[in-house]
Image 1 (cartoon, rainbow, N blue to C red):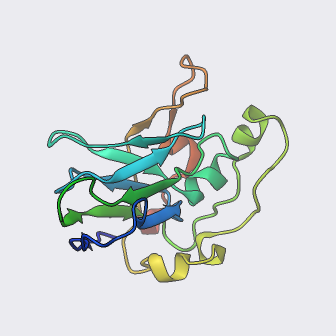
Image 2: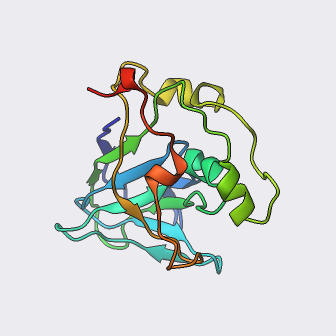
Length: 178
């Protein structure tokens, strides 16, 4: 689902430290973000610090969501992020997040190989995308099957064992292939 997010200019009287978007995680698999028209996006680091993120015109920011966290049994963590107000000036901000959702019938339960890789205990519930709160609103059951072929980086995993989306999503069934 592609969304255009408009953050209007803020009045000069706005309280210092107020936010355009409060800290949150996205429910989907991943969110793809191209360059916004103004700064403001920040992610929460593992050390608990807010890190400003600015994509240049030739970059796409990949933000992991709750569904991918569930599928990987927490190997990929949902990215906590927020949007802060501009430091100077009365600046508007436009961004275009692309939220990647699976088809509703896709099983989002943690994969056995990833349960083993993350300590042997399932830390997330078994369910499909229809049972995740908010997924029915955000998802689109009319979209064709999803097949993503991009490698994903694992900050704390074994670099000799690269993990791709194909490792966590089942292969498409024949009715999903165009």
